[in-house]
Image (cartoon, rainbow, N blue to C red; front, side):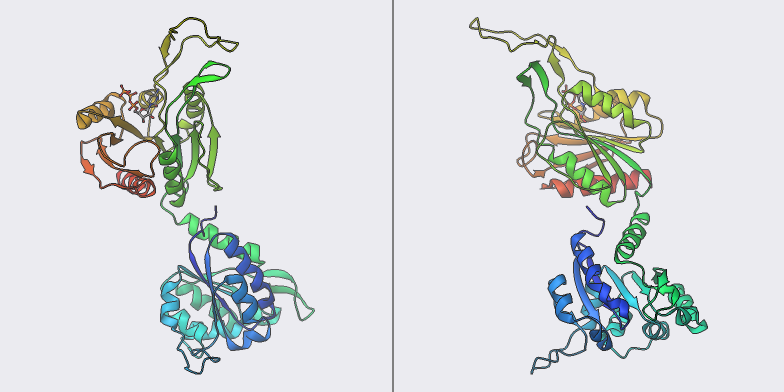
Length: 403
Ligand code: CTP
């Protein structure tokens, strides 16, 4: 999943031959899961049609202050357009438009939108090499970047004029990568590694049977999403689950048993900054695992169980600078038990679920949790979607770690 998913991206197109590549830029943003709107200068319509762009972006395209084809003359609100955008990308940006942007000239809807927008603005220049080298173009770059706009540098190569040199608009893929990376490095958990456990564990009895539990893995997967949305690199160690996640920041490590989860978690803990253990790990496993399927014989059948390793506790014993978070699922004396676990397992934070709360626990998409910090601050929460619980949890961890 791209960091651009669900972002509102406004693409500004100006009158350069590179505008023919704008269709591809729109496609790549849509593929990344973004919502795309296009604003064009009137002259750019000679290079690419609004119909192409509206079809690809699935939105109307704006190129004038009023809707020309409408007899009622509807005003296209550049202020709303500017405020709608999370990101404004002007590609291609001609020397003419950049000079106007640098000087507050506002004689078309693209420029009016630029002046109204409060979001980050990226511009990808495209022009012939002598225009690119010109002092006035350099002055525009300087002014625009000093205003906080971000320059996506042009490449070197064959130009439409037949000359070879600097001035080729960055390729669509490079434009999207540049923006993704720029957003990523500004996120609060960029450069931090977060280790998460999720789901149940299955403890084998014989080749076809196991002891397991009803954990769906939802909570842990939502935490992985929330952490990656903050820019973290996530290792998600998960027991058997139907949950799916596709995100280049999340490495999923499937395991089956508590012992496998223990080994996988220990592979990654030392290099992690934050560890959040939300898995419902089996506390006991069959002492003997039969090689062959167990046949039915007597009316009763007894299974001897032995303790599994407590993964969370083992991390509490070896942790150095890692921020360690555990979960506690309780049915009675909830606060007392959770505080006990926080201390006994040397945690920095514990997330308490009470099975007495409706809508909390296994299999549902909601949860009602209480956060308890190492200095005994208790934060109670309303019943929320697991996605929002995950966001709250990550926000609290950010505050606690001052990341
Ligand atoms: N946990 C773990 N390894 C285990 C058992 C539990 O890492 N073998 C972790 C869970 O992921 C959770 C926390 O420990 O973060 C609490 O688990 P829970 O079962 O509620 O607590 P226990 O310490 O096992 O105590 P009890 O079952 O007696 O309540």
